[in-house]
Length: 232
Ligand code: ADP
Ligand code: MG
Image 1 (cartoon, rainbow, N blue to C red):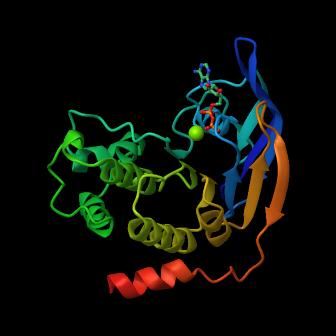
Image 2: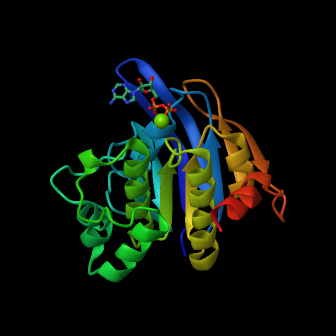
């Protein structure tokens, strides 16, 4: 089970209010996307859920347990890849999994291949492009065993075909393991294709402005069909 409740959180930096009375819920196995203007506080919200910083007030519960300031409760992919420069790609992708317990190198290698990075296992982050580093960070989040994932603009640096292929991979993983996902994107099509529900934040200080439930079955994704033809 993996169920997130955010209750009335506020976060300011000095006298600069970023999040205001923000409440939201992600149900078990649900895929929720957050959209909102740049600077509205999406990444700030993710850092609070990831336990990297603390809300000024309000609470965050994962499966009824308060996780304010508790790192490692969720699998978290930050907006910038944050790879460790002294670790090779293989050692970078297993970082999240390693902190949680034993892990399977074979699965890590398969995922590196699935992400189109075969041959880069023993390279170092500075040898990879921004889009490749973003995929390393994505694999790291997928390999982390926590059932709740927060992905902050995970595909923003990818070319169109790679992005669609990674969306498809995420859908496959999500439907196979029914992880709960909170996802930030600026791409409305991506949000509609991937999500059960879309939350739109207001301008700063951010609060929930609109919520839409996406009907099932999902709208057809023409770009994805095109990508499948292109790749296979
Ligand atoms: P988004 O991800 O929606 O684009 P962010 O959460 O990154 O927005 O930032 C929201 C606002 O909070 C911005 O105005 C940003 O400058 C400010 N902010 C974020 N982190 C800090 C920090 N550590 N110190 C001061 N201001 C911050
Ligand atoms: Mg951001």
